[in-house]
Image (cartoon, rainbow, N blue to C red; front, side, top):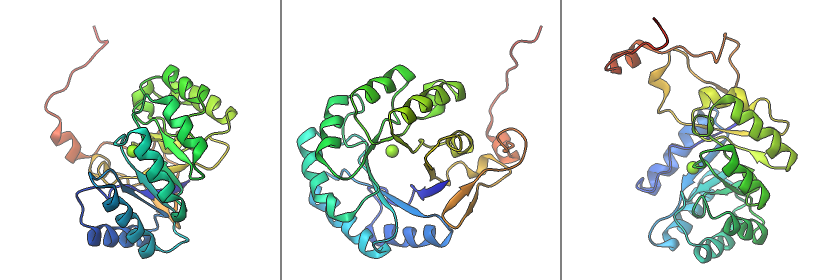
Length: 236
Ligand SMILES: [Mg+2]
């Protein structure tokens, strides 16, 4: 699955460092770059997007993520200013539960709208599908009740013609996203790497499924060292 880097462009990261991080990610074989937006001054965001687009060139996929920072008017103005940068998507432009606001924005802009990592059930996601709020759905399996719920939802989102870019926890989502008819985007964070003995396999812009049993990841000794206690359930 196509994969993009999420952790190099936080709001507090100076722009020169964001550019260096983007270069490093691309060298590691990660295909796309996502940066955060939502600075108090919107002009600052526009400058940062422009700087990154110039740095990585027109052919490298670029996404932005506002983490619900804007009201409807700001999101629309900003979204219009973004059209020229050919973004893969604008993520979480509005409050996660503003389904109508998302729908208006998705309708008004050419740039696809992605959202809803924060929704906590299939039912909430159905509201989003019903309102035609997004072009790209971003469910989080641990947050909506696990693998079965995720697969129920993605059957419905495929029927609705939405693209898929699951949120975080790629060690699980990689397998689930692989079942989707349109090739999804998966995100790459290095935060979880110390938890596992195995590494995610990334090559030529894509993340590959492991052929090991189960999810293909085992907990590392380092991770066990961070565990402060254990409890067993279901034993008599
Ligand atoms: Mg996000």
